[in-house]
Length: 99
Image 1: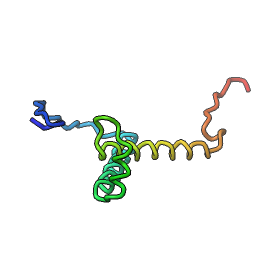
Image 2: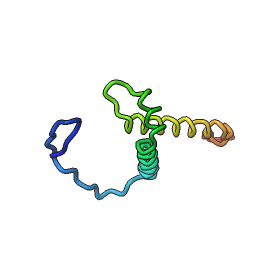
Image 3: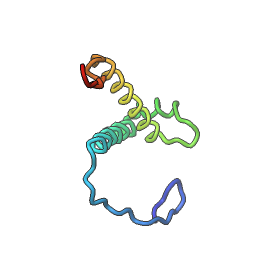
Image 4: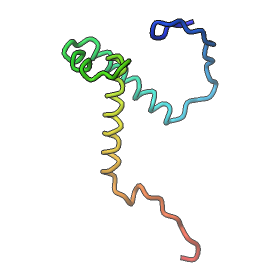
């Protein structure tokens, strides 16, 4: 059993997978770990906390909003870095026979 938004939820205990995580999964886990660290920092800093309180959507907590904000900023930064990579190094060319 666990508590979620003031309600008691009964659920099966998750089983640990025997498969090794992929490189992408490891990258996402690390990104989320940094997002949680950022959200914790926001929760402990009164000024940041009050700034996030102003941005909340209905039913959203400051912690959730901070994680969402962090993840969006990271995605934007990754997209900006992708745009800096020369196009020819991103494009896979198809080799044709006889040429």
